[in-house]
Structures are given as C-alpha cells and as structure tokens.
Length: 127
Image (cartoon, rainbow, N blue to C red; front, side, top):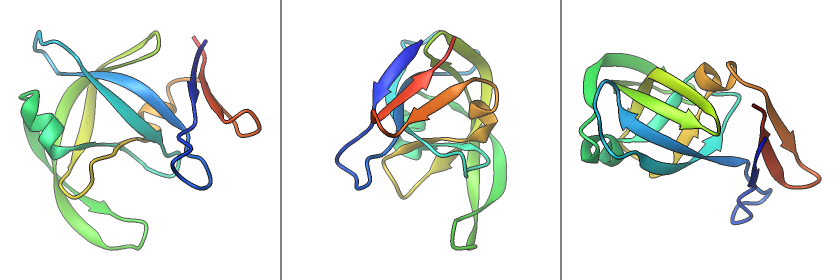
C-alpha cells in the first residue's frame, strides 16, 4: 500500500497523491507531479505548461464543464501515468491553462482502490 499525507495548506486538508507522468509512446524521464484527488471530476487534468515541457502529444479537443456549469473547449493529450504500483499506459488528460494543480479524476480513480482516511489525514492507494 502507498500512503500520502493530505496537503494541510488547504482547509479542510486536501487529499493528494504523487504520480509519475510521461508522454504516451515516448521514452522520457518521468515528470513527478502532485495531484489532487477529485472523485467528482470525470477526468484527469494536468497544467498545460507541464504537458508542453514533457512534449506530450496533443490528440484533440473536448468540451469541459466546470463545477459552476461554465463550458470551455480544452486540448487533450495522451500520457502514461504511474501511481504507486499501478501503471496506466494511455490516459487522455485535459490541459489546464489556468491552474498549476494537477487533478486526478474518476477515469483513473475508478481503476484502483483508494482510501481517504480523513481522521489520519492520509490517502491510501492499495496494490
């Protein structure tokens, strides 16, 4: 099991995990990212500057709806992600042009067992 401390810079504290990301189909040194766990998000978001820096390949665009209901068109990139012992070889992620925080959504979360232990302020990723 992999355990990550919540980010106490937020109130209430925020569940986060560390992920390794590489461009899909490319042999690059992985980028280490801290991602917020968001079970309310359909998909995973990574800041656009991070995707550009790793030279990830843009594969298209989608319409994304925010929590307020506002819609916007965003670019989609394909990456490979590693979270603990789990490898996700081809994840379609939305490029976030406005924020510097990565968000791990249900497209990845629904493939693994995640425990949010609020009393201990830890996120547990089961093998």
